[in-house]
Image (cartoon, rainbow, N blue to C red):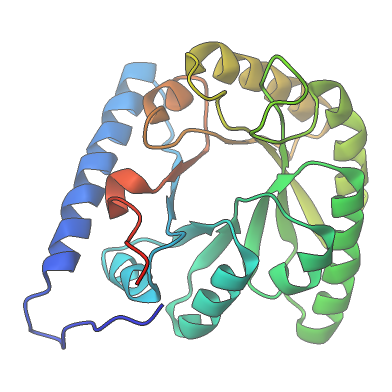
Length: 247
């Protein structure tokens, strides 16, 4: 996970690479926002999984405030190493209930709450963490499965299960029901999926007015996600490049 970062003033080719990737993605977002006629700009979360803490430090130097990770051990190590940077860490991967106690120590948000047991585990962990540190509530997005078959490999709660899960999150001390999250079905046109997610979001917000967040859109489909109201975009490879080779 460690990597040499050139001293201040030295040329850093990796920094320039990230700067270019970030500029390209920001331009795509701006164009998508303009095409959708939206007055607001979605929050960019740079997905840094598999990439070293040194890259996250570079991203922070380029103005990035929000980063995403999908494995607790890797995320916890990076968050501890970069504690002074005031970053917001977003947990975006499938999460085991027994990892809740660890995740609440560093995460600003969890985008993958997909079952009541996990909501309960996060509530319990947050009660202890708030008592220990007084931290702010944990933003929780309900991950919804948009695959036509319930066994879709992308994970998530069935749309029919969202209202009950929302009630559990909204009623939990220390948790903030932020909205919905989804990954477009693999290999399919993302438009119908994001349209469906926007409808689910509207139904959720009608009951829970504070839960207007829509976490959707990645490198390959961010334009379509912006068109259907995404408030949080999770972009990794188009900024950071391919996953580094294991050494």
